[in-house]
Every structure is written in structure tokens, then in C-alpha cells.
Length: 246
Ligand code: MN3
Image (cartoon, rainbow, N blue to C red; front, side, top):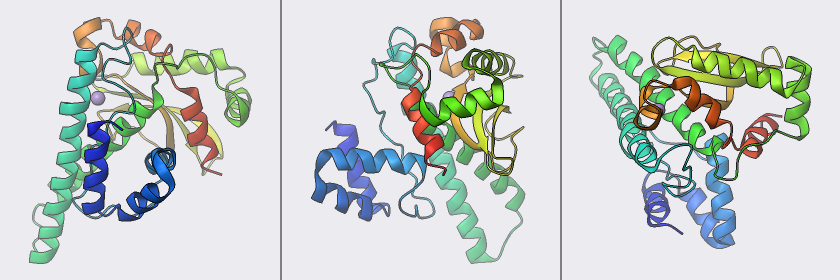
């Protein structure tokens, strides 16, 4: 187990994840990894206010080379994603303070912070899991059936998701989601982290097109980054997220 993962587990026992930690120790490393993975799809235990943790990368920092360089992954995870976790915890703590003091003068500000940093943390957590050095190819199983039903075939899904990701205005994301209200897959764009969503949509595959995700290697060539990203998409993870919903 990596040092980062050990530290993460240690923090979990303080941060309210004692159930996950306890069951992981009793059933060994494999079960522990499964528990952590499931936690990012649907939390297996409540995360108390102000106690969100930065999940360690599910692979080494250089594992996504040459598609995403080690420097980009390191900064993106350790600085940017960590910043959203910190911002979310801070917003939750400030909201708790407001409740304790009965002073909601800043509720608009902290609500915006909750949406921005909360969505930033959630999307980045999914993004890292969506990628794998063994990725690429095409999805199988029920997800493949749903893609064919909604888009006709995989190539059309890829064409629309790529185009949506490349054309986000400013910083944001291209997102393949499941909309339970419609019981269908949907492709959305997100500006920054939380704008332009449909309420209730569950992200399955998220493509970060903030410049921090690609600029060191690809400079302004966002389209080239999006095209290369399909070589490392972990379709098993995307499919698992889909199947977990039912
Ligand atoms: Mn990012």
C-alpha cells in the first residue's frame, strides 16, 4: 500500500470513515481497495461536515504518461484538487458557524462556495477514477447497451462528448451522465464546476477541460488533449458507475 493511501486511511478513522477502515482491516487489502473505490461511486458512510479528504490517486503520478505528463498530474491532484477539498471543508465549517451564531448575512457567499468547491471535489474524484494507464477501447455490457440505445453507437457518443468537451466556454467539463428522471444517458457541458447541469444527473465520465488539466503539455491545443484522453479512459470504471445506479 502506498504511503498516501495509508495516510488517507489513517485520516478516515478520524474523519468519520471508521466503518470503512474497520471492515477493510478485517478483510484484507483487496477488500479495503474495493471499499475505497465504492466510496467514490456512492459513499458507504456519512462524511461529517468539514471532514472531506483528498483521495489518493488510484495509480502512480507518472502512470498516465504520455497522455498526461507527471508534472500536470502532480499539480492537478496535489494543488488544484486539494484546493477544492479545502474550500469545501471551509465553506461547510463557515456555514456551521453561521448556524451556531444565527447569523446568515453571508449565506449567499458560502452557498456559492459550497457549489463551486463541492462540485470541484466531486468531479475531480470521478475524473481520476475515470482514467487508467490500461484504459482506452470501448465500453461493454449494460453501459454499451445504453449508449447504443441513446446515441446509436459508440462512435457517435464519442463524437458528441468530444465536441461538447472541446467547446466549453472558458473553464469547465464535458460530462456523460445518467439522468434518473428521464432514465436515459445525457451529455452535458459544465462551465466552471457547477453551471449548466441538469439537477439529478449522475456523472459517469467527466472530462476536465480547465487549462490546468492540459496546458503544460498541450498548451492551447485543448482539442488534442481531449482526443488523446480517450486512450486512457477506464471504461470499466464508467460502466461500474452506471451499473451501481440500479
Ligand atoms: Mn481540474
